[in-house]
Image (tube, rainbow over all chains, first blue to last red):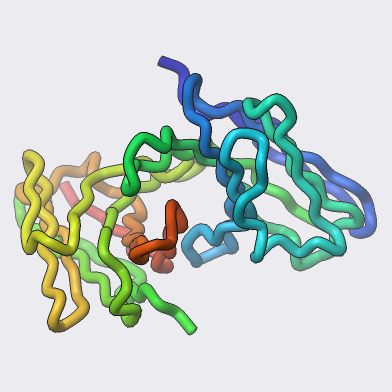
Length: 115
Length: 113
């Protein structure tokens, strides 16, 4: 079974430029998460989708970040414009919401460097 | 305000010995705890979990202990193997918070051959 797929794996951009990340969750997983992981820290949730609905986006900096999950499968996370402090690893995860404490499965992440 | 703390950034143990990774939490509403392992350039992978109704959960070489009164959990790996070298993250979920996990900052485990 294929795991969570993310692309690109690495991205280097100049500040003020836009950038987008793509995620394909595990087949059948209706819950999708975007996390940001700064160096030396654990992942921090940015947004969670249940199917195509964003049910928790309280930690998403909405002035520059946006996300969408059309058709409840793939998702994209966009930053426009990027700032130096956005340099981090952006992780996508998915889970099947059959029970309350289901396991989240992570993709390999996209490492973003903003110059 | 870190609700999940892993105070040891790194730990080195000899192959075959026991590795003990610690995690402390402050939120008394946490009722489910997970450990994830992360290799370089990969995403975290689920290792083992424990519900607050238990104080121990074992899976092969991995055992997680939960001390609710001390708000402390630990992951024991016995015997440690060089392939266990990775960053280990402790994560917690609060009652009623659906699927939101709060992660610690991780502990880099190095198992020396």
